[in-house]
Image 1 (spheres, helix red, strand yellow):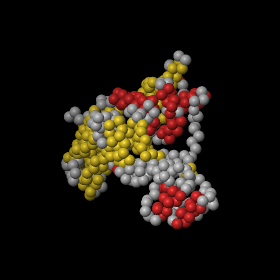
Image 2 (cartoon, helix red, strand yellow; image 1 turned 30 degrees about the vertical axis):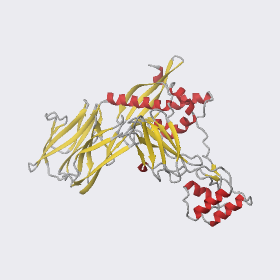
Image 3 (tube, rainbow, N blue to C red; image 1 turned 135 degrees about the vertical axis):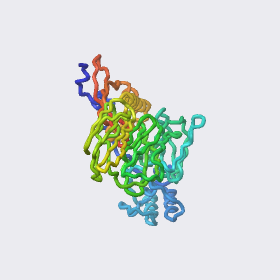
Length: 477
């Protein structure tokens, strides 16, 4: 047995070796982002940490309604009552600030540890790349006023910063190619950083619902929703919150629940970087069919075991039930009662299982279930590519992009570590090792990352999971 198979090294154990070497602390001490000088408003957008008449004039104009202050400016300008600001800007704040400028009183620094709101993607536009450059524009209100916008290209590591104006507008020209993704973070005056958002260059995702059609009458309380999609490797599709089965560029969401009357069908394609695209339509649902047949797990990987539940909802009586599970025209099973019936799919593919039920009145009921059986070799190639992309992004310092390949709470666990050692990531990444082994069990896949230590292979387990949005991400290491 190779030594690494009995080794219980985990990723953090490897990082501890760096701790011993004095390169970084595993649990970095993260202090509050910073403090602000109370009353320091001038020059607008670039306050100089000094209190003078210019600060008073800006506050006075704001109180009079001549100018509108940003949230940070309102925090800084709220100096009255002294020692207990009331959240309002009025003549009392102007009077207190004037006394501070004259040296009659001292104002305590303002502690600000609250992160700004993330940028509003609905107010940000990205042009298609022309000559290798895209223009990223934020309309008024897209980000906090007088904040710093940081853009990072996940593929190249290119980084640029821009300062928004008082209204939160900004424009940046960024080198890019179609299909690349930029991260965008907002940093306020105190150094607090917002949650990161991702911006696609070009049309990253496409999504179409092919069935049912808008306005269709469905004579059942569930429906098969199918369509096509395209996107980066790892793109997933959900329909009304239900994970769809994927085969090549087609998706199948079987047994999407319907209520009697009007129903919204909402399909969402999600890329690994958090970018999504939504398509929707409406259909009319009805009461459950008299004879129901439902698959418990419509998709999986070969060999995929499925239980089909036959239910006589109308108590019509079942004389005969036949099933063609693999859609080859041959009857695979004949029965005379409701119940659970199982079938194992050993070959990857898309199967339209066909069922025929004859009730006591000799009425024939037809039923169908779509089963999608994935190829583990295809999944294996994708997961290995995901691990490689994770390392590539760490190597170029695109930490937010790398974190997009981790499931929560892994992001929370590793983000402070990666940021603490950002300058050393290229050297560390190249020593992590290679992905070996691999096995899929439902929505979990296990691998071993193996590296050489003094001629002996050692390793730690690494798990991929199908995350909440359906994207496979690293779930533990």
